[in-house]
Image (cartoon, rainbow over all chains, first blue to last red; front, side, top):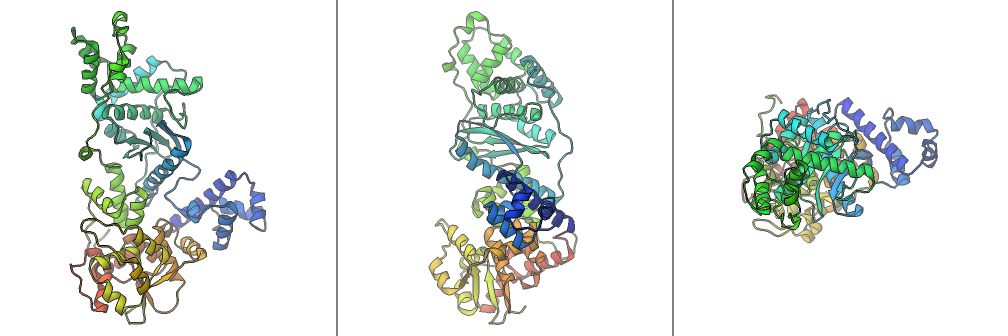
Length: 381
Length: 169
């Protein structure tokens, strides 16, 4: 192990001791006394990573702070960092368990990137919107982003891939283990992650992705709530969610494109037309309806006739054999490389991803990834 | 280290499972002094699910045939601090096995065919203690029912060892 990597390891332990100490509401002096350190300075230099912790000291820290060894030493954990926003109808306790697993996926992506020398862009893209922005501002931002990224008239199917490329974000398609979670965004200083429920209907997936994308692009100016429900409490939280929904609608249903469709509508019955057109755009009928209303296209006389319960198109449910593969190509490529270099063991990779060893092999095959062939010794790395 | 009959062989979960898959377990257990850690055996048991083409491991029989070691927590802490990320990123069983062998004196070898484990072993200065499953089978006079997959061969291990020494892992 290189000297720098060793230093990083002790810095990580120090950061986590500090995080656990603060979580226990202890000062350095108080914890030093409980650990029977000679002085506060010893703990301070351990927390900053200047001084390496000894095994006896770490055992004391584990005992006094009531944490396990992995809490302090496992690189595939996010401790005291990483903020999530869940689009979910689930209790905080249920989310906690799932979030722990998601934290492992994200931490592993970052740690393995560091091991492999695959760094993140030092630049962060953001939308110039604040919670004082109007809905029109969010539509305008979405339309301009559509043009800049060349998303075309029906962006739903390509948006995740393009966003992943343009923003250097991590997009993960996951199973939500029976929880009512549509998606989530996670913010770290180095990169952002969007989690998508791969079993959701396509229209919902598309909208959730665009909604989470808004949060990723406005995290610093408008940090979202941890649980992003359909009816957030408080004016600011409600405003942020409405801006996110308006942005998502405008991004997925560009004005020019929907105008063209609307102008060709003729006398077609409104519910049938919305359901069919939503299918073409890969969005839900409700999302399309609200977009039409936002654009003031539906005359007031016809609006009163619209029955939202008849707007039933939510996209096709993915068939079992046609589900998006778990995680993503980028993610699995990094895992494969790390396995080939020994930065990760097969068993650890499987447990981290929540799959069996056989399933890990199948997943790699799905992405066309196979172990690096054995090179002749000494022919270069 | 040669494979003289008194050399204790510490096996990880993958080595135990693969020895069963290849049908060489009875010979290994009969002719070599085998050992493992409690966590490694628990991992074998956890993955022991019936399925098409899967070979079940008789856990009770393994318990009778090899020595199972409990690894004290301080040994694991010491191994993790000595090996840094190369140990802390391993699976619990692998971590425990490397921590266990560090506490052993006398003649012993370790059989793990995972590159992560080999990287960790290299960082802890244990690289020359690794032995492939193919070498174990040869020492025990066992014939596998199918050829060894690359990771379980002497050649693969030798190449990984060279790469580790050259710093090109």
